Length: 432
Image (cartoon, rainbow, N blue to C red):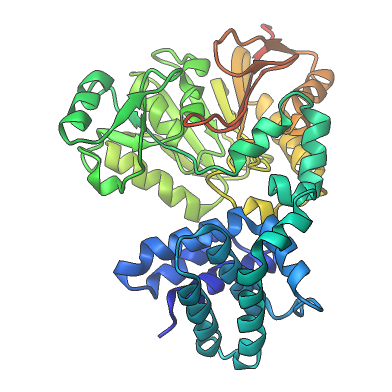
């Protein structure tokens, strides 16, 4: 049986090959893990991914020559071992011996001597090695160099704050289903159960927990009283301002958090939920069923119109595919997987989606554009590009106390014990 360090290496290895996601690969490793060790496995995997830029620099400093790129399990195992010695309170001898033992279990016995020597050297010389690396921006800020430079250029007044928050663990935020229970009542229920929680600052239905817990321990979760959703994502419903009788499109809708919040908040609306991935669409169905809500689910590509029946919508929510650079706290594998050259391709897709869906909006209708990105190329500059192409589109400034007002839309940055990084813009289609 493979120990926890070996299972962690199996989860990290695909990321080093720039494929999949930590969520996918960790799910496979968790299936092979003893129940009592699952929390430790998650901690090691998320911690290794979160600290990957820093750990890779340490590995480069320790190795006389790099481990072959094809030996991803070995590279992953070394990073897992270094993470334990750098950030965890596990005794060094246990971390080293268990990591070396994992090499045996992964049929990599030829590198056990190397792993043992490198990890022991780091444990002995940790302070000196860190001192030699401390002036490296990649080490200091624990992000890829391209990310740091792009952030400096885009946000000269905010870049360090964003990087600091990206390295933290995101809080667990939930959304109360107001059709079932008020936020005040639910907060009282949590207090009665000794679950420390506070109301969100900007979402009237949001609550942030002091400590994350399993959803099975949330009172009324199975009955649809509450859902897990970041506060920034909860703001879409108030921006859309749907009215009874309206026909609305939620594009790129999976996993369905914004869709369900909309349906919980406004009665008498009909909503089409568009999602390109059938697998991800299953998540939408699961959420709708748990919350006892109804929407028409359409499997289709938001950048194409083959699925459209030519019926125009009163309002459209576009939760556009993006770099996800505003949610690195929740998805630290983005530090490994995301590349600088991808941003242009992503923004071009976003523009294609916007242009395609705009034709589906009624005259006088409103479109709300959202991303979980912090890069203006995908956000305010994208909206500027779109407005130059569409004479019948105008920008609606968002009057709000959250985020930073931009020439187009509002930008949110990840906050301590608060919301993730997000962007919103509202657009209005001219009347005929």
